Length: 167
Image (tube, rainbow, N blue to C red; front, side, top):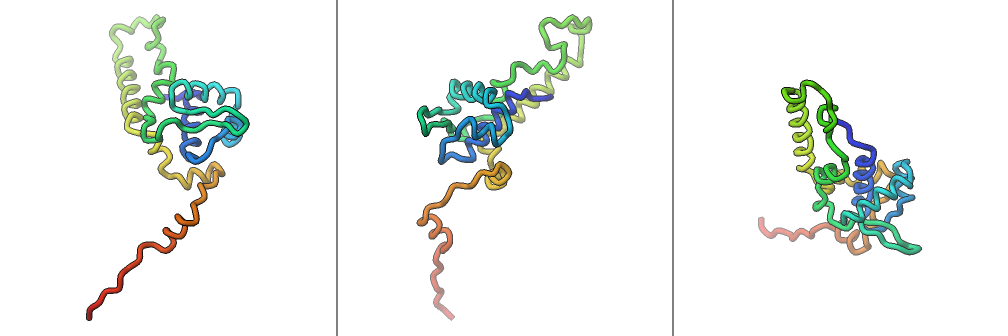
């Protein structure tokens, strides 16, 4: 099986946005990171917006961001929505003229394989895809969000241990 470029770019866009939840991203920025067409990406972002996955902010300092938590974006559902069909062989097409169509076991086997493929994708969310967050950010050249001074101090000092008395 092979996913369409449309689905590939959709998933890449969602990954990028999930890696930077604290700021808006632009289509130009995403297109540059992945070396893909801005025009193609514009269509994808428009559809993601209509589906409620992405929020667009207009204006000079506008951009896009996830509209839902990464845990709420299911990979299987996304692939089902973005793939036009799963006709992995010509016998799946309504116009198929194969004489074996009514008795073919291959067609059944391929249909089961497509369903198994989607069933596995249903087990994953966008949150799963971004689990290796720092490695993904490094690979894309995205700086991780800066921590506040209070957060940095809290994590550097760690929990304080009490001295044990005894002997």
